[in-house]
Length: 485
Image 1 (cartoon, rainbow, N blue to C red):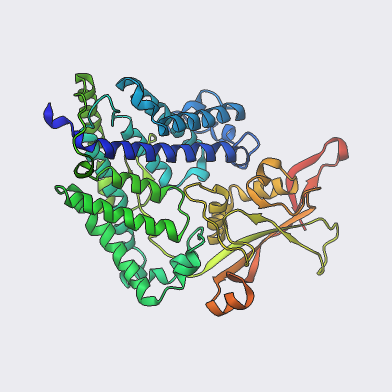
Image 2 (cartoon, helix red, strand yellow):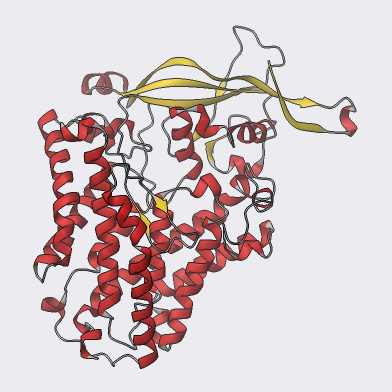
């Protein structure tokens, strides 16, 4: 069937697959380095406890069959090794069916991680990686020309990512309709980057241009993805440029990079590369791709219905395999930035003059003189959840107590998630958390003080807390519960 293939998109497929393999690699490495403190057997939200009530139907994956920290680490590092090999082009040297199984193995491994990750993995880019990864299974390799149907499904995914984000904004916060949300967003976003201070200090009219351009790129341009070339290529290019702007202005894990990869899959590079003959795909492959296309279109019913709903939900999966999802971001933009600052002391008696030393995180604001760093596409999960905790203590209730207990115990795995532990020799006797209001400094303040932020104390988030000891004394050790001073 000649209509089935689009050999002119061979480079588009190659670029997309390499980019996707890179994102997979970042995701698996991040999982391997962070899981023990977050969801490990002794983590804040342990996987074994979660699996007691999460069935295979609700959370399908390998860990339903067996879980141990060692097995999780093996899965994560195996995923990283497979991703690195794909990035190097190993799949193009294999038979078509073997390459498909390779991509399927990556998808199954990451699905297993996401489905036990709980709140630490409750982000839209997790579902986006899984949905894009599922489609990549059927995209083929150098042994067959790219299938048209899968290329269209990738555009359908990109359309939902952009259009869903545009609708959630225009329906949500009034500041999007007034074009004023960017007055606040660069300062109040979850994890500012090294240029966020400068973006925030742009003149007001430029912020309005930013907001207006966002609406155009997310509500109008995605429709052009389904038009003939070169219009579709121009639309994809506009989306990619907008995403690069977001990359420069903040840290949003791999959301922007994966969206760019999806956009590049819609670019027709043939005017630059010329013809690239590829063999026709086998019949079994054509039948399989057609069946998957029908499946994806059928599963698109709920995401489309959600897009059309006035009560549109963002970043929601409608099936436990995350095959077809709905996306969106920043339907509401905060006007004020709050930060939870965690401190400890080794003094046995608390008094007004007690010296408290501050824990420092890698990405979230803390030290007012420290310029925010660039971490994306790497995802600092604890730092992101700390931003949610500052919005409301309800977001932190399931895990924050466990976090404090591990600080009081100088838990090695937890401390690895932090930039600096102020108690390297012995754990603190008390830990507390305080809520601060953070603001970017002005140009004048920056020159005078060298500080990128200014902050003021708002209230206590958690009063001074210590580990409680059992009546049995030293033989019994330290209880996991805490006492508040």
